[in-house]
Amino acid sequence: TQVVDVTTTQFADQKPGTSGLRKQVSVFQQAHYLENFVQSTFNVIGGGQGKTLVLGGDGRFYNRAAAQTIIHMAAANGFARVIVGQGGILSTPAASAVIRARGADGGLILSASHNPGGPNGDFGIKFNGANGGPAVESMTNAIFEETKVLQRYCTLQDAAETDLDTLGETSLAGTVIEVLDPVAIYADLMEGLFDFEAIKELLTNPRFQLRFDAMHAVTGPYAREILVNRLGAPETSLMNAEPKEDFGGEHPDPNLVHAKDLVDLLNGDEMIAFGAASDGDGDRNMVLGTGFYINPCDSLAVLTANAHLVPGYSGGLAGVARSLPTSRAVDRVAAYLGIEFFETPTGWKFFGNLMDAGRITLCGEESFGTGSSHIREKDGLWAVLFWLNLIAVRAQPARSIVRDHWERFGRDFFSRHDYEGIDSDQANALMQALTSRLESLPGQTFGDLVVARADNFSYRDPVDDSESYNQGIRIVFENDARIVVRLSGTGTSGATLRVYYDQHERDPAYFSVYAQRYLEPLFAASEAILNIQHFTGRDAPDVIT
Ligand code: VG1
Ligand code: CO
Image (cartoon, protein in one colour):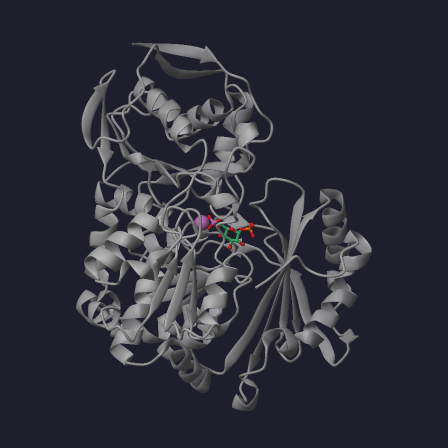
């Protein structure tokens, strides 16, 4: 084995999006494509010399091949140690937990999250720093600049492939390659946060039926270890728990559309008490009560309001944060608790500084993301355990926990409408037209709604004062109802337009109204303001959550 310098190919399209670099597998399979990005990352962190790198992914197609490539490059770049999950696997939250627990300098996570996998699907890679969290924007920008000018990358010539399936340490060109159980550190962390005894009593009660849908993605083994082995739930609680490279040909996206089997089950005759699903890399969660969908924005608010009931948070919360498009349900709880509250741009990378500085404990996004400062990623199973802990200690079904919450704080109706795969030029034209109208919107009337203010959201990080612009258009009406509009930063072809709606209701007489009906006046205002049909030819969204 010998360290060699290889002349790279520079690529113009390696700009990380909301969560890392995501492209179709075929793009990653181009010669030097992965290597160019990985070497650029190593250069930006100041080289690998003497450092420890954590490596793992969600097990999708190309995960194993990419892991081998990266191990060779890490060894050639002088890393002291590479800690890789067995089989090349680590869920995103587990990778974050391992980076922190092992004091690593950072990690590379191989995932395209909720995007479909397989040879014709997507692949992705992102760098997380020593705090376990996604690289901040200044770093992802620096990596992007480097990918465009990099001349050479370092790798090993004639090196054997690492046996990723056998636990233990081997040495490769002076680098220790440690193959680690991908589940244990994470499962122990969960056991330290939640009341496992109370949850066990709940899950071993035959009258409490749980269904967890791993969607053929990475969380299957995690759910089996935690829910079945440690907490005693019957194996039948798990659905689609065998990870597959192509996620069984489905979108591993836990929402009402892509996790429909689970939703149907919870709406069916079996009286399942609690249902949950996670995404490709295990950082998202959808939670459901019997016949009852819990909106992720409500979930964040409920967890915040009840955190004192959970051992890991019984000492109180420093503060909370939510992304811009997330409903303002959690704001009301923060005000009630008298704790700090922050509104950030979309994407988990904006929560890291706040957590590192001890300003927030819980945070979340409307996109089925909830988490806390136990790691620096959102965490699907953590949210599920949090809910189970609450159900156990409050001795109440999920549905009535949410109803009680609404009684206290009112209900924040929320919906997101996604228009997928639209032409990028059309999407940009829509955003441009909207932006140019912003100043003239206040005072205009749409049905019964009068625009109070409209702007383009920008964010100044309160910890490092960095600024991020163009993070979403927000239109707020005089009754405080709100529309947020932005383009997705995780797609791999065309553009996805996301339109978010939320409105607060205090009167319990309306709490049971179907959200899509309640928000209808806002939808009408949105069509009049955005002209979606005119710009894109679409008369209905593809996905409604
Ligand atoms: C989407 C979500 C965002 C989330 C991101 C990564 O981004 O809206 O809230 O943080 O996915 O989630 P975008 O730019 O497509 O709206 V994951 O689970 O895909 O890492
Ligand atoms: Co994800």
